[in-house]
Image 1 (cartoon, helix red, strand yellow):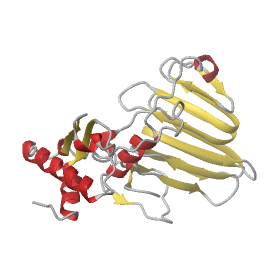
Image 2: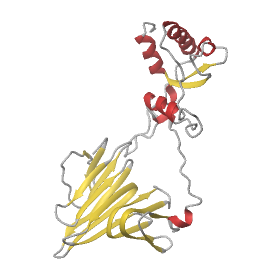
Image 3: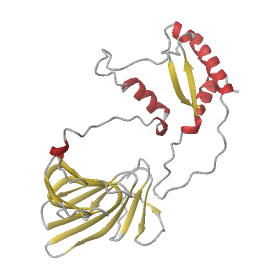
Image 4: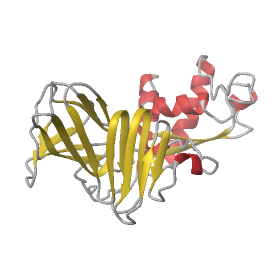
Amino acid sequence: MHGDVQHAPFGSQDWQACKLDDAYPARTKIRTGIRSSIQFQIGDEEPYSALLIESVGLTFLSETYKTRDTKRVRIGVSYGKIRAGVAEGGLKSDFTVDSPVATLSKRGTWNFGMSYERATDRFEIFLLDRGLVDALNKITGQQRRVQPGQAVTQAMRRWLDEVQTRRNVSVIDILGQEDMEIAFNRIKQDGLGVVNVGGGQAQLINLSTPLARTQFAEMVERTLLMTPLPPVTRPPIVRPEGFFGTGRGDDLIRVIIDQNNPLVQRGLARPGTYSIRRSALEGWLKAHGRGR
């Protein structure tokens, strides 16, 4: 498991932190926070079954039992995304994933899953590796069979029907990242990797010399003096699955480096407007003996 993961009995709000090697009975609900996940082994006999609940999800272990010849597992997805796999062997497997708008039933399958967006009818059912998955849209009553490498959405169109219109768009979540993540994405993933000889790599600012550090510190001090502190706001609303705030937004300082800046003139910086966390700037000044 990773991050903030909690469990509680069905109908209870007595949430407890999940721990490694915990065992949970049927009718247990699991919720995961931001950037959190948990993996389960379901039972210790064949067919071996595994379940991964990804971040920001609420999942219900509805049924987990076996009969003389069948191992039955039923998972409810209130919202979020799960992945699962069943290695066939031993008992017959009956594995079903439910959501408010769709149902997934697997057949001899490994690496399948469902994602459901809360308060909407949007969902996706997918199969990555092997086997077969049957998808049922509860709203329209439509059924589709999903084969390896395919997925269906609430429109109940197979992946092959949507391949020309589906696009993966990389969106940099500046407000939700750490300073090092922003620096890495800005340098390594600026969109120029396919045309730049250097693979999109670019140096934003070079502070390796005492003169450059002094000039940058003076610029930062002026910027901080001209930027008022953010107003005191009411505490954020705490959601059951975790806080959805940016964690950074009100604390970003816009540092403007124009063409006439001495650092740019000396080839030590690229002109532009950079949003940097106030605490990071103040920490850098303090580390270099210029803290206020």
